[in-house]
Each structure stands twice: as structure tokens, then as C-alpha cells.
Length: 95
Length: 489
Image 1 (cartoon, rainbow over the protein chains, first blue to last red):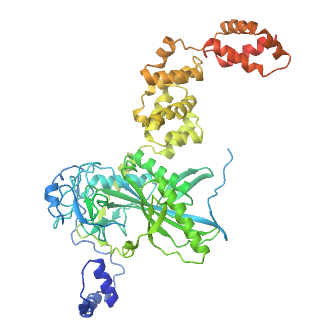
Image 2 (image 1 turned 90 degrees about the vertical axis):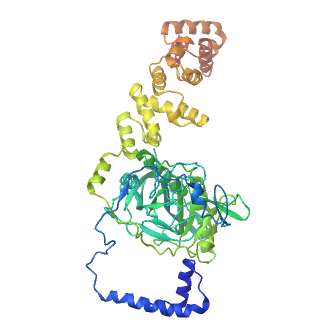
Image 3 (image 1 turned 60 degrees about the horizontal axis):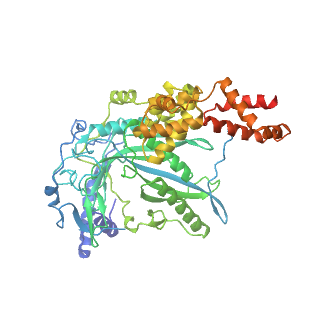
């Protein structure tokens, strides 16, 4: 797999990372060499190997259905870009 | 009963087009707390008061799954006759939006908790099976409010992280009516199971609608458009109708249909392209590293299966067999669990067929009129059964029963008491009736003569007179018999 400049720009846009046009070339080169390194793994035949989803030999931990959190609005809203007692306030996003 | 034929096509200049519809229904799981956090799921709380550090995606917080949500998904899967997967995986679906603080939604992609199933619909043209592709668990997003401020959007995260079941149908639906029947059936099944309250006003049940069209008889599907987040059956039906017509027009004008996401504008009654979603389908799913795969023990699945209540399809069959109801009556009476419970209690105490007729008539009309659920019915099952029995035994006529019903509503008294205290008992003593009828006939000698000379229509006049002088209490059948007998002589 190799990445072209368009793909780099697309992925950056999806991840909301602004990429300097001047840096796109060197980024493409860097990322392609990283991919090349990773792709060495494809040399191994893994047809009969189940994908490993976790190195922990455990099953998913679950909890009981109880209300034991919330009611910390003040704390939560400290991260709002604009101040408001009840809501997060963000620049208008509407269709 | 003769069956109608399926007939829903969009007519173009160049022929008839079949509409192909698939639904992605988002059903909110009934649970006290959220899918991965201990915040409450209760509807209508103060904004942002049911939000934990997990729901607002503070760094370093770890999700822990709610075991009840897992069980609810399994129950729903079983209710949809679906395959339950012993192994499923949670993935991250990545996109940016103000009401999604994590920057990704935890969902299930390649390995959903529930696989293929099916739902049976009763249509006027026969029963139809709709395939279920899958059901998976995922988090709901927060709510954006756009109309509180001209330049800002307000975000309430109370809904953020509540468990949803996304139920994906196969593209088996062919008309707005089938969509209506499908949503109602899903809702009914989930309400029986207690896994989703199905409240569309509160957003507990919403759907994305996939629509495409093809010339009648074509085997291949057309290009589809997805209409996002429609929250009422009526709007779904309007959106489908509009979208299918739009696509047919494009085809007939030799234009291409773009596969895209559209939104339904309820004010203008049209669908519109959502340009901002162009990139959004690139969700870059990958397994959530915070969550291990979910392994379900067969024992748990079997236990849940055993504890399932009787579901609408089974109950309908039983109602027809046990109570002698026809398919239509059975269908109506099993549509809601509470309705079927009410009916069964009444049927235990009274005539089964008559109970069904009176429930679907006067009781439903009254509840509808008052905007009440049957669980809040002002008339108890015991009183209603007494009323039905009074009709059945001939103690009161159907007409008087309506009167008694009204008084029951006003006073809350039992029908026996009302019938006695108001002297509403039907006059069924043949001797007394005959006496009364004789009096009426002798007072109307001229009419009797006219009747005898061939004016048959006057029979109704005599019946009317009997009813009038008995205050509506004369047994109608007996009145007819006696009148005929006396008028002959």
C-alpha cells in the first residue's frame, strides 16, 4: 500500500489536522516509509491464525445497571469553549 | 375475506417503478444507566446533569459495559428470531461533530451481537416476511440545539452514551404502508420484551431510511439514497414518497442518481442533500482498544430465551384458537401488551367474542377520545366484563349498554348497580311485552290496517313505538317476534 498526496490531505481533513502544503511532500515520504516497514508483516502467512484482539487472556468486564454517576455539570462545563450555566456552547453547526 | 393485491408503484412516463426500502432503526435500550457509564438515562432531566466524565470524554476515562444492555440486546435478538452471536466486538466509528465529544462513536461493525433474523407483517394482501440483517449495540450522541442563539449551537450531553440498538433490515420493504407495519411490529415486539419503550416523541425510536427505485420486474437494485434520522412514521412515509418520486424523475430524464445522504425537511416536505456528510462515510472503523471482545455464554442466552414473555405472533395465534377471534380482532388486541392483558382479564369473566367487539368499539373510542392508554382506563376489567355479560345474557340491549357505559365513566359505579338503580333492565317478559304491544296496536288502528293492506314499511314504525313507550328497554328480538305474530292475526 502506498499513500499519495491526495490521500494524505484527505486523512488529515478527516482527523481535523491542518497540514501545511509545503510539508505534504515530506509527510508523504515519511509515512510511506513507515508503511513499508509495517508491510513486512505481510510476508508471513496468517491464513490459519485467528486475529488477536487483545494480549490479555480475559473477557470483557461488565458492571451492574446502577446509577452512580452524573450530576457534575459544573465540572463538565468547565471545558466548554464559551461560558453558560447549562449548556456547552459551540459555533453554530447546522444544516 | 378476499385478499387485496399489492399495488404501490411510482408511475413514470416510461412505466411503473417499484420502490425498494431498507430501514436502520435506532431503538433506545431500556436501562437505568448508560451503555458504558453510570449516568442516568431518564428522559427530561436538566441539561448536562446526567453526564459523567466518560460521557463527556475526559482523557483517561475507561468505558465499562452495562450488563443489562447486553441482555436487552440479546432479548431483542431472540424476539426477532435472530441468531445471537457468542462473540462480538466493539469498534470505534470516527467522525467529528459537536455533540460527539469522543470524536468517535463506540459501535459494532464486523461482529455485531445479533445476526440475521426475521419479522412477520400482516398486510391486507397476506403476510409478508421482512429480513433482519443484524442488530448491534452502540452509543447515542448528545443533542444539538440550534434555535437558542443566532450564532451558537447549544449542546446537551444527557443523551450522550445512552445505549442504542441499531436494527438493520434487509431491503425487503416495498411501500410506505409496509414501513408503517414494520415499525409498528418492531415497536410492539420490543415493548412486549421490555427492551425499548418505543416512544417516538421522546426519540426512543428513530430511523434512517434507504430508498431506491427500479422498473417493475427488474432484478437489480437501483442506486439508493439514505434519508437520515426520521423520527415519526408519518414523516418516514412522506420522505419515501417524495424521494422515490424524485428518483423516478431523474431516471426518466436520463440523469444519474448520486448515492448520498439526504435529510427530510418536514416543513417543505422534501428531501435535500446533506453536503457536509460527503466525507462522513469514511468512518475508519477499528476495534476499540479500551474494550475486549464480548463473549456470551450459551447458558446466558438459553436462560434469557426461557424467560421471554409470549410475543405478539404467538399470542395472536392463541387468541384465535382459544377465544375464537378472527385474524383482524386478534391482531388489534395483541398490538400492545397492555391491551392484550386487559382483554384476557375481561374474556375470563365474560363472553369472549362480545368482549372483543365492545373493547374495540366503545372502550377504544372512549380511550382515544380522552387520550388515555388502556393501562389508565377509568373502567376496570371487572366492571367492563360485567357490562359485557349483561349484554350477553339479554339483561340489557346494546343500545342501553352504551348508556350504561357512559354512566360508568361518570360515576365509576359497577354496571349492575346502574342497571338496577336506573331501571334499565331490558323488558324480556313476553307476556308484559305482548300486553304493551297490544295497547300500541289498538291506539294505531289506522296504521295496522295500512300495514295489513301491504305497507310493509310501517313495521319499523311499530318497533319505534314499542321502544319509545318502553324507554328503549324492550328486548328488540322479542319485540320483533311478537309484533310479527300480532300483526299477522
